[in-house]
Length: 385
Ligand code: MG
Image 1 (cartoon, protein in one colour):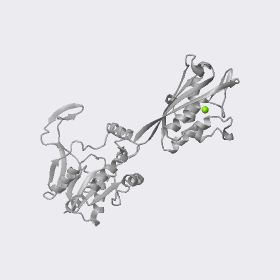
Image 2 (tube, rainbow, N blue to C red):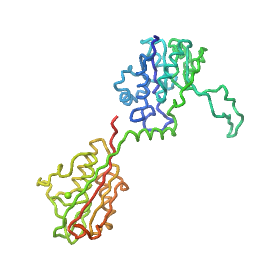
Image 3 (spheres, rainbow, N blue to C red):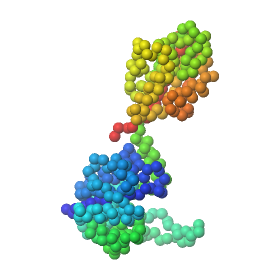
Image 4 (cartoon, rainbow, N blue to C red):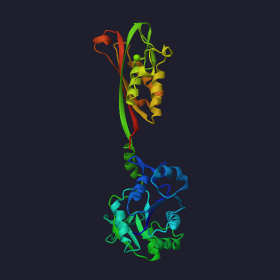
């Protein structure tokens, strides 16, 4: 069995990509693109060693992407792809593989069968590259106008991994220094050895342009799952001259009875958030028997629940509160309530709903005996792998 090394080129900074981090480290189905790529090579029975060429600034991203995969210490890349590959080839000298598969990290969709095909082809050939015949009609365009139609019958779009016998490609790279060629088959051409073209894999595209962001975006969404909690609370009226509702003090001909400030809206909402996290209820976290919560401002409870979500590395997506009472009127205070809750929860105002309803004079709320509140909260948490 020939000794086969995989050389993964991940040194690009993705200037064409425009993202915050280089494309090979962006998440795809919850894992960095590079990790998908590395995992396939590491697990393949034909591949004996896998090494990655990285940009030194990306060391932390690389460590995360390659954690636990058992790959060789990465190699620092050069200013061009060609120089990066050369650095990687030189680093393989102490392994002395019979063959090397050179692959772009940002192409995570290749198949195990493709690796097998390329390794098998190297029994007969010095080099092997996968490709797809060009299907679109090609035009040569000059100054914005079609000059001519290019015969596409012998044109292929080339992919990676490209496989080569190691001593030959190392020598070819040495000879091609400074030429700035964009793939290794071109280096082989310059050296004058044959590269056999194999059928590539249709989906084996490279993540390169802004349009690929849609795919990445979908992949990122798949990292999250959403959980919803509900809350319900009631406080009865007692003599007084104001009520506290969703953080706003409203003049009224009654007050709400309670151990704390009796803010029924904040209590329901706190319970909804705790419920989304399956973290018990407000009474468990803030026992009404505990004197320190006597007359407490209920925003303390809401902030506590919000912090609990943050500590889970989760995020509140939206909240929605329904206040159920005949009086006082909620509408004049709705904007202030929303702004206050948005501030307490560190959310945009358009993620905070406040609604009010009566019960058509039925039941305890209809008889002006108290106020009820219902709330929903949705949180986003990292999906388990
Ligand atoms: Mg309560």
